[in-house]
Image (cartoon, rainbow, N blue to C red):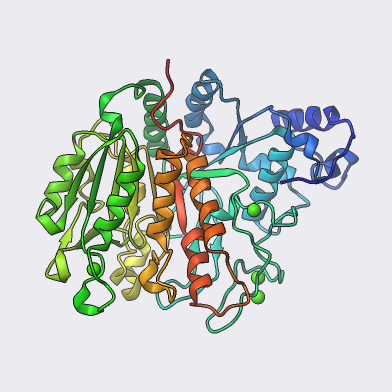
Length: 477
Ligand SMILES: [Ca+2]
Ligand SMILES: [Ca+2]
Ligand SMILES: [Ca+2]
Ligand SMILES: [Ca+2]
């Protein structure tokens, strides 16, 4: 990550940063040597170990987050909360908008404190105005469905391959990750490799946040050695009917479900597949969900509201649980890490205002929250975390090479956990994306909508909604 060595004393910077953050903003307009040092790349700082987890939250949620800080510190994970007001004061001279200020702050927190995990607290703050409790970044890669899409990977990919701050806006025009139709990428020097693990609690109210915080605390303190944890539920079907394309042989969703199960050593699995009728109605998934699972993997097609997959050869589309069904799960404290494979299940910018736009309404964006938001904040069960797409979920069927795509990225996630034993959720997410960048390196000089463009979108749109520092399976207490 870092290549240069400086012997400059770091205590002053650390003391300043600590007190500066804890007791008020620095005075704007007087850049000091200490302030400048925030942006000096210095590998000796990467060895500091002051805080492992950084929580960035608007002031309004500060109190609701407090129990999580107490809990994390008790688990031995040193945690620091910083409000967005403090971020903006600290980054007065850095960052062109709030999202970039947050990204610069994360960089500083990595270098000054040794932060490894960043939890962004807050989703949309209005159903009618485009306002957010915590900043987001939209990527400008238009296709015939998404004009732009959310990417939290932006906040994790801090450094480019040269070790410099990665703005994702190399042509410096205030549009990020631009790769327009029939053109090469305008914004390049993006290595897409996460340098820190980032997750988000996309709460739209304090009530939702309190539910999510309590779920995390309960999970980490009670799940260890519970027999239900080492079980996995997979629901899938024939994602691409062969009747529409001769290359689409077999049942793709089930194929990837089987691969995931193979990777999850030590887990016993239950398959709900359309091919044998075990998944023939949403009730099949809802009923099983109730039993509690360590992991749930749903492989198919989605929208912000729905998920399902085809019966063999497209003879029927089987609806799985939609966002209005989640209160039926009733799995209580037996909360899975849920990987939902499909388009737009984690498009966490949906809002009621879009019901007035015919196109957005047809895309099912005119709803108060997306599928993954709903399953996270369900108070009677649901999931501890959700991994899914904020945009179209491209698969190998969309690629000329007929390799890669979102299903392989999900497979890498299960491999990282089940084979490589990467047991902190954000690390598992980062391992999957890192594997994908290495397996399908992006050619930024290729044309939009080509394979590299698709691979870029696959990685950028795959978001971790949940706590990136979550100890999967809980702590042994
Ligand atoms: Ca740009
Ligand atoms: Ca441009
Ligand atoms: Ca990077
Ligand atoms: Ca097929």
